[in-house]
Length: 368
Image (cartoon, rainbow, N blue to C red; front, side, top):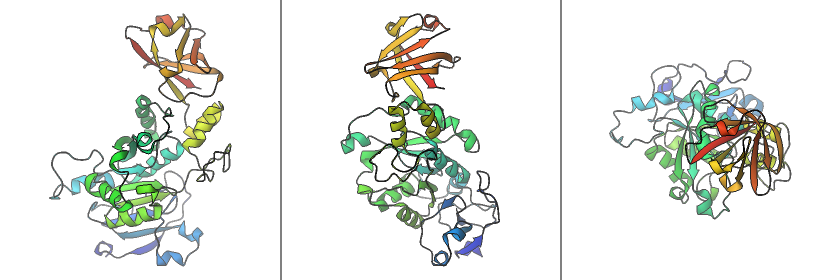
């Protein structure tokens, strides 16, 4: 009966909210499921309007599902949707989108912090998770260039480390040139997700904005995605448990106390590496591009700031760091950051014993 396009509200079974409680095996054919125990959907619904917000958190909305994803089993599994669409005459045999049939997390993923990780966790519960990242924003918008929090060459390692949170499915990142989407209206952007990228679902935070001049919000994302047969999941922001709104007077009007890349940058600037680790959910890694001549002694390397591939902490001395060379064992070290240079000093291992056969070598310093 539900396959015919009717819409019902069904109470969730009582359960304690945790990471394993969201995937519910419900036998509704061709239904779009929005779980409200840890996610919420900002879509107006008359039946929901008559209940308190507390009741809403214990309900699940099931509505008719679009042509993008139809699976005959229990719950619609989005990462298998592609196999159901092989007969679609509009689907080209070659040149498929790398994210076709997957579930994309939407946002600005500079820091890859715990809020971003939560997006991919939710995406992994309903399909193959991807991060949809936009490149070239600074150039297009005229922003001042600044070092990334995570070095580009280190992003895959970070995403692979999220696999244990995502059902052993490491999320992949798909990049889109910002210039190609900047002038799209919210509807045109969702149409691109549907017809060009051919995604089955999207996951975004409650404060997500999109479209030209950020004119679309999470509510509109849900409405437009339904028009195009895409499941849209909106999740609550991951809050910074250590600090309230306006951490260190960020000047960010959107700051309501949620974990953000701005907070990570502020914590790095003052050298609060413990706080940085809490926001990132891991130790921060600084990536250095080192040459043979940068080795000042058997146990010290000094490089100019221009040799850094991502954002260092503020000036100071950082003990108990680890120097990581390729896949080799980590080496205890001390990092000194000054206005012009970065100095790495080991206490036990002689750096001259490292492989210096290449002109350049990438070294990582982890803030343990």
